[in-house]
Length: 216
Image (cartoon, rainbow, N blue to C red; front, top):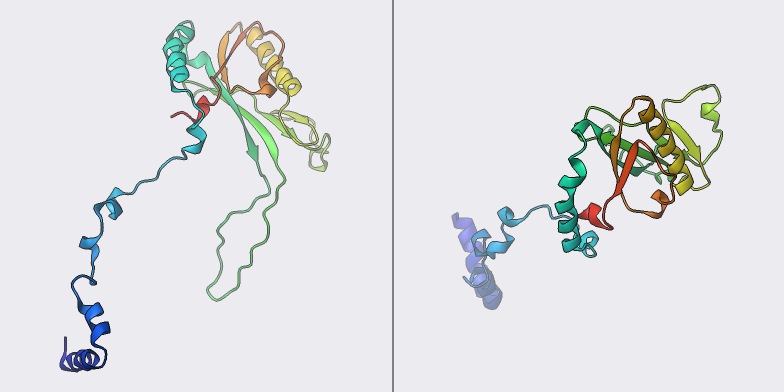
């Protein structure tokens, strides 16, 4: 500390002795080494959400995993598939924008328009089953000049998966597998929309235990 700084500290000590003591007392001055070890940066990590796991029955998971080898023994990795739905908000913009310094960059509300997409791929990662898309419009304007799709498209007011739509998709997959004289095993999440589907000859559907999709 320089001479000027020392004189300022001495003046402060004479004018406000109690406040100066609080600033200079060893009990009040703290640095990084004084922090509890649990607060050091090396002790932090990205923790998964525990709320989704609250209702997971660990014993059911272990029992299901113990039965898995018997389910897979008759199938090659190319013939074991997993399918699931996801919501696609196709009009949402990126949360981050590029702008020049000094320019205002106002942000508006994100679009809530969405479609539901059902995706499926096999264990070996070599093949995907035909995609199913569910939208809110039966005949959208953007599809006016399109004669054929690379995926199955269905519609309902809320763009949700239903047991009828799921059954139609499953029936189409089963028909293709029958042409190829191929049998596959399909794992799906357990939900009401995946129930009451017609019996299939070339697809064996196995549902995951309830709530176990959050088990890692």
